[in-house]
Amino acid sequence: GGMMGMPPTGGPDDPPTIEYEGQSTVFVEGRSIGQTTIQLAWFPDDWMGMPGPSGKTPFFAGSVVTRVWKLDLDVDSDNDDGFDYPKNTAWEEHLEDDAYGIGKMLMVEDTQFTPMRLRLPPGLNVNDPSIEIKLTGTSPQSGVVRLWDDHSGGSLLWSPGTTSFTLKQLKYDPVSGGVTFWMQAITVSDDHDTKRDVDENGKPDDRLVVSIPNLGISKASPFLDGTSVPKLVEGALSDEVKYMVVKPNSFYPNLQLRREMKSALASQGVYAQADLPQFGLKLLDPDELADLRVPDDIIAIIGQPATVPGFKNGVYHEHLTNTYILAFAGTDDVDDIMVDIWQGLGGYTAQYREAMDIGVEVNRAVVARGKTLTTTGHSLGGGLSSAAAVAAGIMADTFNAAGLRIETLYFWPNGIPVIGIHEIYPSSVTRYLNAGGLIDAYYLDWDL
Image 1 (tube, rainbow, N blue to C red):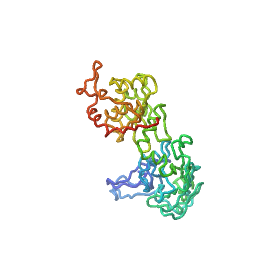
Image 2: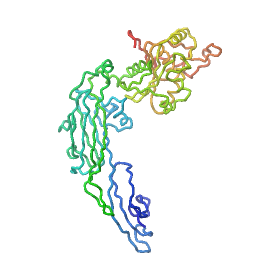
Image 3: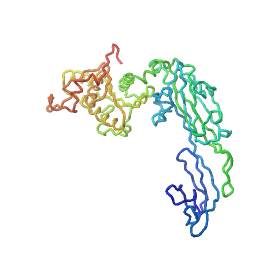
Image 4: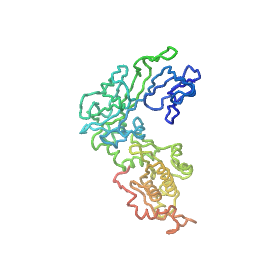
């Protein structure tokens, strides 16, 4: 009988085969980058790597070579590799063109070039003129960059515009399938130096796009029925990455490095339940919280729950460092003012209890993902954040925070706290008494 594939030997390392039953078409699915030869062969049923009792030997009817194409452009989009090659992590890949990513940060003052890697199938013919690589840049918003073919300069490959290259011009490595571009920042805009600039002008969105407009096949390969593979397979492959040219000590480099800046922005944004892509802060909706495995009863009190008047909070996925922030809004209505006063008097309030419950359960869900949760809040929100921090054992950044009374951490049967006996969450009182290790409290002469 006929088979698609290589004839078997009977050993465990036999390549996969398909019984040929006269079909005129076999469909091929690409699963990973590479090249595979598919062979049509007839061999006797008693063939086990050598002639059997029949004495018959295989007959080979022909073969085709299939190449699985993929184009993958990578850069250090999470800004934790410095001038090294990108690690090609799933998170880097996610941020490459994501609305909440800021892109790879470059500075005109950099003393080294930054690598950007293009991965193609290995084994391509570097002299094949039909394989055309196009490199395109969006109109620069943050600044102008150039691309070189060597980390020490070498030859200038690209400046803004669209340029086409052959594999040979790009110094394509047929063994690894890799190409390296070296990025250099030439100019930088003033439009994103400060938060006020970003509020007025938005976040810059600069991208580099690599594409292969037509996939070339070196020559026609005849099929058994006399038809052939066309010389060019129409259709483009493309990939893109984001970058941002910045000044030293300007807004975005500080936002990347300083947790308290991200916390302050979240504590401000949560008042309006605002999504903040310009700051890399994604406000999670109920479906996304469910995907994070937050319990349904906790999801019900995240946001602006009608069951707790004046209570307003949100969970942000912070994209610059791939962490999470639980933010609480502060005093903005009469209900909140009464919570402030009652907490100051040592009374029990639902907002503080709900804040602790949310902190514990969201932290449990985040830790199960291998990530970190911090909490933040301003005014009353700072007090709620402090309660969540000591209940869950997480870090808090608070701004002009209301107080947190120790009585809040205990159960209140019959409206009276059972001090020293029944903590709502174990060890929360110990953490309260040593809160300096968990809570960074900022007091500002101006308000958020």
